[in-house]
Image (cartoon, rainbow, N blue to C red; front, side, top):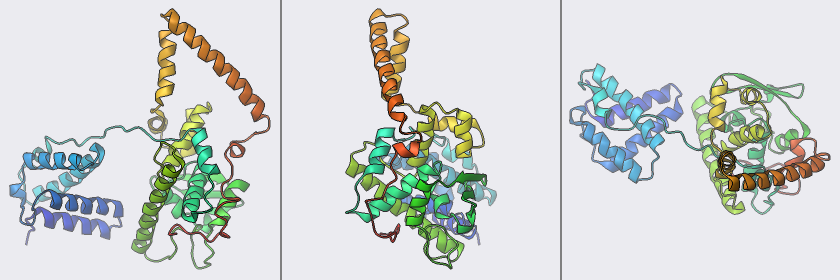
Length: 356
């Protein structure tokens, strides 16, 4: 018997994604269902009842509820896939027309990255009184030291991924292999949170109870939610002005490397991007201050007042660069500029966990 209601089809689609271990897509489906149930009574809503106007109204509801355009577009792409499946079963005449009035593209968002001062604030923060924030901060800095490793890859790192002081792992998103030399400041954090369960294949205490793929995925997702929650609390505590998330470390690594005049090709290789174009999407967002300087430089070409101001700023910049060179004589590496976190903080003997 064919399922006729939209709700039945969404539930069935989510269940099938679960069986394929596509947990993120499954979570999206169940989030869509939850939002639809808040928007309207869909218990008896069939595909024949669906109209472009219904989905347009749902879009307005999502936006009014604080949903971003990109998230709502993600929802509608998933709903379109479900409706196309129903179309193949003869329950919908033209699935494409149902979504002709809603936004389904991608709106480029500003990538959040810390500047060097903000990164040092995070690394230097005294978090001895809040061990859970101390661990979140340490993992954030570890992610930065490991070339912006995403949290999912950090969670699934295995003890066997380390050979002769070199970490070798495959990115879960792309399957591309990365190799990173493990320096002392990296080892210090790894050892603090290393998994001491000999039966566990995992390097860190994030997935704490090895089991089925589904069980481990749920542990990872729970840890990610808690990690982002702690990072948000950390950014509020420090007054960073930037909301910390698991991905900010990755964007920070790329942005600071770019600001240090590292060629984009090297940054792309460091992030294991398939092309430099992907890397450029990380680097397209510049601060208002940076753009103001660029605009001043352009105005200086034709306006004497702007030219005078530009020369004043350039003089100050050269003076600052001279001071930087003098200070860098005793700071040859970035890891010295960004202190190793936790030496005098969160001193719990390495017993912290992401679930604290």
